[in-house]
Image (cartoon, rainbow, N blue to C red; front, top):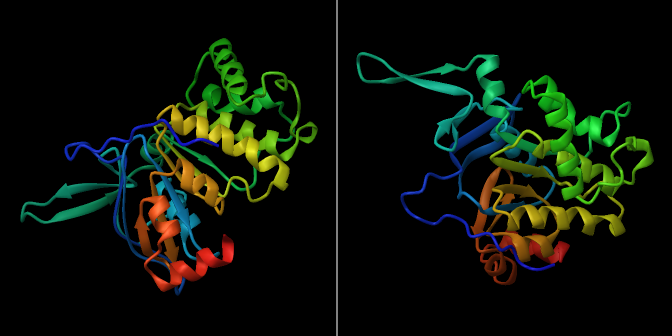
Amino acid sequence: MSASNATPATSESAVPKVRIAGLHKFFGELHVLKGIDLTVQPGSVTVLVGPSGSGKSTLLRCINELETIDAGRVWVDGELIGMREVQRPDGTVQLHALTDKQRAAQRSKIGMVFQRFNLFPHMTALGNVIEAPIHVRRMDKQQARARGVELLERVGLGDRLDHYPSQLSGGQQQRVAIARALAMDPELMLFDEPTSALDPELVGEVLQVMQDLAADGMTMVVVTHEMGFAREVGDQLIFMDGGLVCESGDPVQVLDHPTQERTQAFLASVL
């Protein structure tokens, strides 16, 4: 696996693809995210690592509005997610929740790939890929089909268009899931442990597709335990524990020379 060829935007004037400030999330009395601050630059790959229960997946779900935010702000391409700010006559700013339609429009710009493939079992690979473009974006069926074929060929499944999920390996199903997310032409891709449900021999084929996306300049935030991917493809590595960002920086630097004791202990257990 070679390093990504993508060059993330580093200009100070560039609007971050994702900016998170003071993000808190509760589930009942459980405080899952405890004030997360994070910036993701356009064209970069950010890798989130940490023990189970550290809040990594919840953070992704907050970015994609699958979870509501209890405090803090999330911006994607400079647009506040899930809310709009209204300035009152006294100069204070009041937040108003977006409508379901407005939130759906925001979410359509963000692709997400889950640990479980979540494919429709009664649809072929191509059917799964073209479902959302046709019914959500109202794309012409022939246009959607042509785009779907192109995307399945891109992920190496051009010969599996008419196969159903039960006829595909786990790695192939996950590649269909990636093609399905790409079919909505997202500006940001979120991956929530995309290889953890796969047999070891199938992991590489999915990571290769993700590496190719990174090389093409797709902005990606990836929750994974695949440290080789983090080292070779990632632009920044975020170590989370207990709902906090404990350490962050260049992946090679963090992996080889972690400064925090908790990071050191975690990496010793997984490397």
